[in-house]
Every structure is written in structure tokens, then in C-alpha cells.
Length: 355
Image 1 (tube, rainbow, N blue to C red):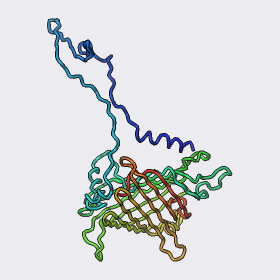
Image 2: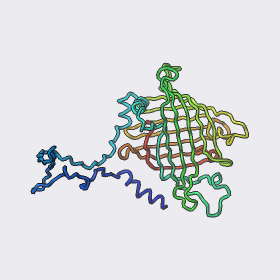
Image 3: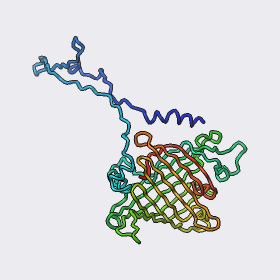
Image 4: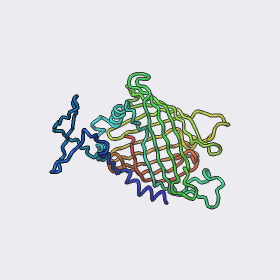
């Protein structure tokens, strides 16, 4: 509860804080031969004395402009154009994102977003997976049903035209955390954190198949783990192909993957495909400056059919920040409890979207 109150009090202040960068004058550093005087009427006048070679002094009456350092007040970030308008001007959602990525790729102070970056300080989970995290818990140890979920994701280009024209090699990193921020009874731990580095090549195919032509095709290697030791260790490696299509203000992604087999001694989760399935489908649709994104996964089994659905909705707030509501239902939201079904609803702020 203390953390929640601190968040509510200080988060607006952080966003709107303004720093006065004006440099105060220090009269003690002014030299004897060069100082600022005041006329009788209160206006500033600059006078200086110079000494000639014979030791006599000469008055130099020069009119000088006094540079007053004005205080700098930072402005709020400008509101970007609506997503649908940017896509229309750039001939597509993918193109408008690619153009902006290229424009900042050489800036050493810019990290290019990969997947969405967001903070959901209020995430409600009516049945958090306590058995996996707490183990043999004490009587006074329980997980809160409200936690803080956030995701950080970035990428950077390694090389262009790596396997022909209009191809590029990228490295990416995504981290998703589930923080029991308001659970002071057990010292507000991170219930689970998933680390996901990946490397992939993006291509722009010249032709399609059966009159179906993807805008982009990505080929990649993905490692995902929670950084824990046994018995809480979870990890797996995948090879994937991501086909991306777009139609006006809508983008689709079909991403099948293949899990790289591991030995029984090293496999922390031998049946993870049963819950994550063998790929995922995503759709993103922009309506003016609002957006809806949907993710679907399924193991495509007639018996013991399992999967997941995630629905997100964004809306403008101020500057570049956006409000974000996320709903998840199914298996595999996090690695630690991948084999336990969960249903969550989160509300917060999205910093960068898919498009």
C-alpha cells in the first residue's frame, strides 16, 4: 500500500517536473578592472580601466550589451500525429515505423523499440500461482492479487543488406516482469521475470505465393528464460519465421516456431509446447489515434486443447505517452507458471506501441 501511495503521489511530479537551468550570477568573481556598475536610474552600465605602458590609467568608455541568461523552461513533448494518419502519409503501418527507425539508427543515445514498452501498475490476477513461487509457504505468506506488470523491449541494427538488398540483421532484448510491489508482508518481491534475447534477419520479399505477398518476413532465433535455478528454472530455445502482412490501418503477423530439443537432464520444462503451442497470431488495428491488438496461441490439439488470448487497447494521454488496458486469459503468460491457466486485467501507460 505504501508503494502504491508513493507511485500515485510522485509519478505526476516526475512527468511534469521542470528544472530551472539558469546560471546565477556570482559577483565575487568579477575582476576589479571589469565590473558592472549601476547608474543612478538603476540601469546597468559597464566600465573598465586599462593601464598604459607608462603606468598611467586610461578610461575606456565602451557601451556593452549585458547578456542576461534567461531561465529555460522545458516544454511538454509534442503530441504525435494519429497512428492512422502517419500510416496514410507513409504508405502503410510498417513503412512509417521503418522510416522512423532508420532516422534514429545512427543516434548513439536512442534505443529502438522492439515490442511494446509499457507499465501496468494495477494488474489484477485473482489466482496468482503461489505454489510455484512460494513453495512450502508459511501461514502468513500470500501473494497479492494486485501486482505491477511491466515490459521493456528494444532492438538495434547489426548490419544492412546482410543477405541481399532490403535485408537487415537485428539484435533484440525483451524483459517482462511481475512485481508484487504492494506486498510488504513478503518484502515486495518480483514474482517472475522473463528474459528474452533474440537475433533475427528481416527481409522484404519481391513476390508472394498464391497472390499472397507478405510485407516482411523475419527469420530468427529466440531464447527465453526466467533466470532462476532449480526447481524454479524455466527456459527454452526456438527458431521462428514471422510473416507480416498489412492492409490499410491493419497489420497481421503469423509466427510459427520450432523448439530446439534439449536432453532430459537439461530440459526444465519438457512439455512447454503443450501450453505455448507452436506459434502465435497477432493483429493490430488503428482507429484514428486509438489502437487494438490481439494475440492468439493454441496447441492445435483435439484432446487437451490449450492456448491463450491477449487483448490490448491504447488511447492518447499526453505527449507521446498512451493509456493502455491489457487483458490476458490462458496459459503461458509467464514462464514460471506456464502450465497454470491465468486470467489478468492490467491498466497503465504504454510508452511505445507496435506501430
